[in-house]
Length: 501
Image (cartoon, rainbow, N blue to C red; front, side):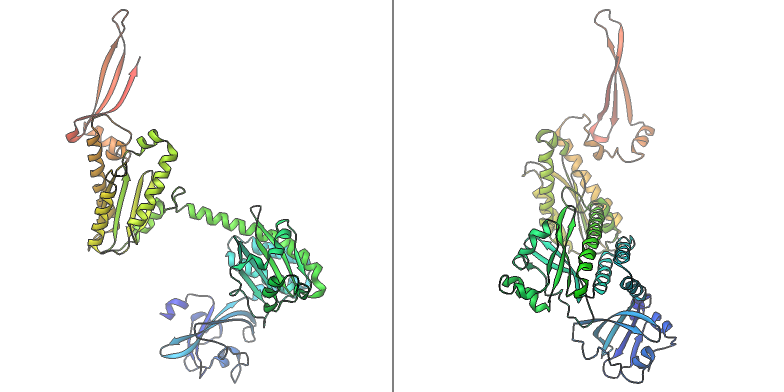
């Protein structure tokens, strides 16, 4: 399992016994990097660091159960920089350290260039990082925080996002040896940063050269800052879509770099805001490509994806379509129809239990269950059938299928659809009359490619021409064309009528 999980990675992964330092596993990238044929019997400090005794920076004693230690190192054998993540695992009955090393040599080089360059170079470099369309937003922001923190010789650099009456630390970089604060700085009450809001909302920064100056005047703010080891800080607003999204800050920057810090944060915060806005738009587009804008339910595209992944036996599908939705909209108006569809979606979500609800189009909905007992499914189908039988002022056609051995998702959908259309046909029969209605496109499947052509070939479509006479002289002045369909037990249905003068 380890081989299949880690051997495809370019990152270096190894597992070492906590007591003996024996290498228990190394992935393919690790073996190739250190020119090893096999890791069996090797000591991690010998083959990975070229030492004859355990490394003085080993994390074995620093690790705790269910915890992780993140750090940075330079490997002398490979002459490359790595960010490492260590954790304790149980490996074949032995307590071991799992280490994953990410090669960050390129980023360290960029950081050093920025440090030895000027502000313009740093800002340009960060802008390139943020505008990398192939990058991951979280990684991009973290890399930029590191660039800023190193350039300003700060101890921490971070992003806070404001959500209502609280703010949360969502991204953080810390200098080696500095204790991370991100976990404890979630949902910080507004009272801790109330004094900052006015300048941030106006687009100005907040600078505290010495937090001891606010110990007596702003005790709540001081109580949050002091335990973090903060002596001074600079905070710049992050604006997204014209509104205050949060703030970008640095703790304890070098005292001789305060002016540089102001310029740096003011410039980079603009690029950060634009990047966050771009990712939010991309995320929104991705969401609505899979979700219905009116109800928030999954749409037909997402339904097809989830349907294909169903595996029986035990999976199930249920289809529901509102009867006479066009008439409802005409009679009560579109806002009423939209509200009705939203309520139906909510009701299906509740009645469907652990099933997933979708709005496919118009008044058509679906529920998918990945695993449900057949009796439970049949009970839910019956309850939905009764619930939407007309007692709410409208009715819906319902069809469903529980997947047994050998059933494919496509077959299940077809059977559920046929059952639903039989109910829909019955609904229109009960409405009386044989005249065609727009809703019958679905019932007769006229919208499906090839259906009407096949009816024409089978001779089921008949045209009648009825003459029109002039009252003045009795001469024929036009005709009425009637196109009718022979449809089973319903007899002749009028599909089309046109007057020709």
